[in-house]
Structure formats: structure tokens, C-alpha cells
Length: 130
Image (cartoon, rainbow, N blue to C red):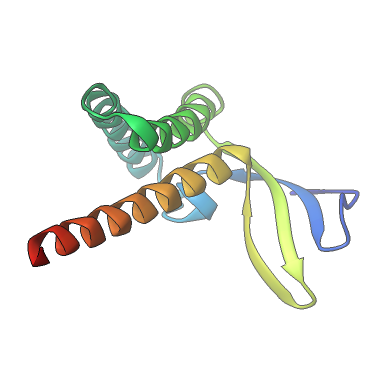
């Protein structure tokens, strides 16, 4: 990897090649597993596209954030055989995974979707009680 100057006191920019999924999970040195994982990611992208057709409101925006991040990482996987990760967030000796902007969008989309599901479940519970 290559170390670049810090943007903020608690962040460093490190250019790293990620052959796994978000935050470097499921990294394989074997190309066969890399291609299987890339194929699986492509299938997930197709499923998200189908879900987008059936969704509306904030759920659609959460899926669009996930899709945008997934497409960015998928493009890098297909054309460069790795995703460039370059943000290293740390506080003193605690380091989070190195990640990129696509990972941020995927994470925000998933968090928004979880919040929407919690709100939806609470509304359903209240309606059942009334």
C-alpha cells in the first residue's frame, strides 16, 4: 500500500488494493474464489435493480445508495481486479477497516434501510394494538 498525507487529524489516506468485499472482508488470494465472489456481487446488483422497481420513497433512496456503491466497487473489481481503498479512520491506536467512498454509500444505504424497517415494524405493532 501507499501512504498519503492526512486529511484530518484522525484520518489517513492509504491506497490499498482490496480484492474482497466492503472493508476488505472475504479477501482471497485464489482467483477462482475472487471470480465467484465477483459473480455473486453481480447477482446481488441485479436483485437490487429488481427491488428498486418495487420500492418507493426513502426505501428507494436507500437502495439507490447501496446500488451506487455496489456499482462503483463492481466496476473496479471487473476492470482492475481490485477495489482501491484509501480512507483509514483511526482514533489513537484504534483503526477501523480501510475503505472507500463506495463503501460509505453502501453502509449509509444499509443503515437507512434498517432504520426504515424498525420504523415500519413499530407502526405495524401500533396498528395491531389499536
